[in-house]
Amino acid sequence: MKAARQLLDSGQLTETQRRRFLLHFIQGLSTRQIAVKELVSHVAVHKSIALAKEKLKNFFKQG
Image 1: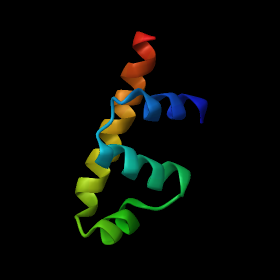
Image 2 (image 1 turned 180 degrees about the vertical axis):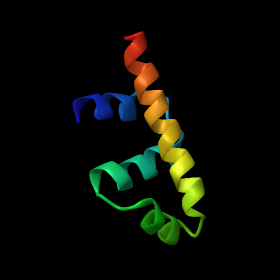
Image 3 (image 1 turned 120 degrees about the vertical axis):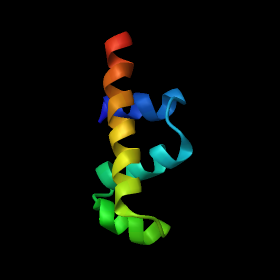
Image 4 (image 1 turned 90 degrees about the vertical axis):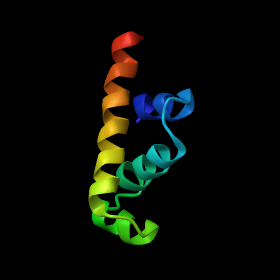
């Protein structure tokens, strides 16, 4: 959780990636639930979350 907070505060995620990351990992919503809420496809949500996770990995490889 601390690692995720550092990434969220780093400014490396887009606002969309940040919001979807929080909804998925903190609030526990599925990609389909987020997609319905945001009126987008679940694939778009999945891609945003996958990019956020990749940025998380890279963020900690650097630091």
